Length: 202
Image (cartoon, helix red, strand yellow):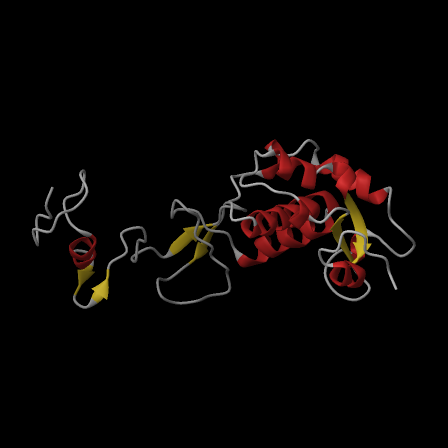
């Protein structure tokens, strides 16, 4: 199939090639985004449901965050309240942190994170939370979880690099992220351990 404008070969179901299609969205030297109504004076907050003042191209006191479908926005004030509330919830914070850790580990193996991780591991976030709390040493709490001095992070007893896997469905991934292979460790020690198998603190 060929582009209706320039005649270049294109994929089926398309009328124009990428270059020509983009040109169609330009008018008077400005790019026309069909997802945004420039004439709108308000935007509905997806969190509080209130219409807040809004003007295209201008910032205001509200933090408007566009969702994937281009229709939902969240105001800055209430989004910050929800963010603080989630940060105080250890289980939600842990879930987000583990999701990021798994993504980084999987990428190092040349694989990709396939959606939500709970369906690929044999434990729930609540079970992981309890498992880590049972191994806390003096000074560890959810208030000092993270990176840096005086904080603790999640460590693999047998480093993830020792397991071989190319997807989250492989046995190597399940063994690496098995509950009995995870433990809390002071972040300074975790960085010093790196990917050593039989590491001992000096």
